[in-house]
Amino acid sequence: MKKSKLKIPELMAPAGNWTMLRAAVKSGADAVYFGIDQFNMRAKAKNFTVEELKEIVEFCKKNDVKTYLTLNTIIYENEIDQVEKLVNEAKNSGVDMIICWDLSVINICRKYDMPFAVSTQASVSNSSSAKLYKELGANRVVLARECTLEDIKKIKTEVDIEIEAFIHGAMCIAVSGRCFMSHELFDKSANRGECIQPCRREYEIKDKQTGNEMILGEDYVMSPKDLCTIEFINELIEADIDSLKIEGRKRSPEYVAKVVSVYRRAIDLYFANKLTSKIKKELLEELAKVYNRGFSSGFYFKVPGKNEYVGMYGSKATTRKEFVGRVRNYYKKASIVEIKIETGKICDKDKILIIGETTGVVELKIDSIQLNDIKVNEAEKGNNITIPCNELVRRNDSVYIVKQSFSRKGVKHHTTFG
Image 1: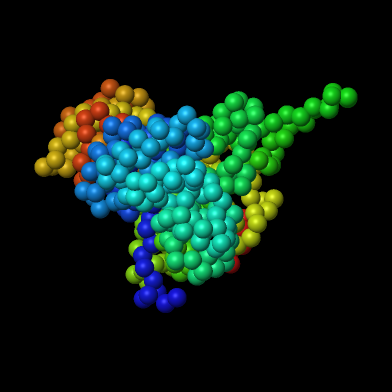
Image 2: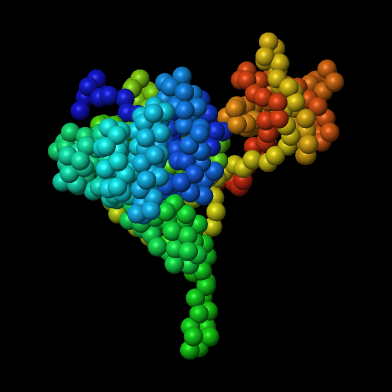
């Protein structure tokens, strides 16, 4: 398809709390998806309350951002009435769409004429399934992450329905995340949004006959790398995917701010005919700065192989944040923020993050420090300093120093694309 005929895809961001929500909106998201404190696949995230729905919608509409409420867990018989009240409340609050897959929720959405998207939990992997959900009234299907790029193109051609696909974030070892490991070991069901991700850990096995033991941690064969599509984002856009979705409602606000801003830039540069290989490499380096388990192209071009597992526990991020203090005041006319250093020190040229529920995430590089009206190169615990800051921040916002995590000679995928 010629670029002139392509529509700009929606960029959808995760929001687990108000800080993440504001960070997503500020960073350029076209839509946000979020859960409330029940019936969503991220029960362990902070989430929102039913009472906050109208405020969320009002804030997002003011910023021309769509709101999608996730109700994508299995629903039991004694919960149907509660789900119906929730769908009705979402409708009355102006939520744009419900993301679900349990047929009871679909049935309720149909009853209230509430637009709905079929969650990736439904494992929609072919045009026949997509057609059936369209007949049921679905506005959109979130395709299974196991679909290849060619699968997506075929489904898009065969069915006149919006297609949503993941472009970045955690991958699950189980098909569409329908895993029972967490439930079996800890009675915390992944299908009820309670997964505590035991698959990411190191395990020890023991031969009961001989007593020999082994550690299964070198490859972490149950822990896939994170999906990252920045190096072939142009191919996803050209496949005419309607919505590009970022995973991460349990990750940090700075993760949301960084990932959304990077993909926003990539999409905009593509349509301006300025998205080069060099820029893609720079954007990949930016993505590596926040939480990640290493990067993979997922299933877009082939089934992931043995090199697509993490090989370690935790994050491979090239940077980390360390708490250093709090905002005491912000002087809007002068564009200056006053910071109380509570631990460590701040130096000229440091990169810092200012994070708050109303502020979202502000990232800046210090180019001047004033201490008692005197320019200094550094300040330490107990000092009150002022630095230039062009974005509005608030009293008591947290301030973090951004530091290098470890030395890496670039960030590379281990998958050949296309």
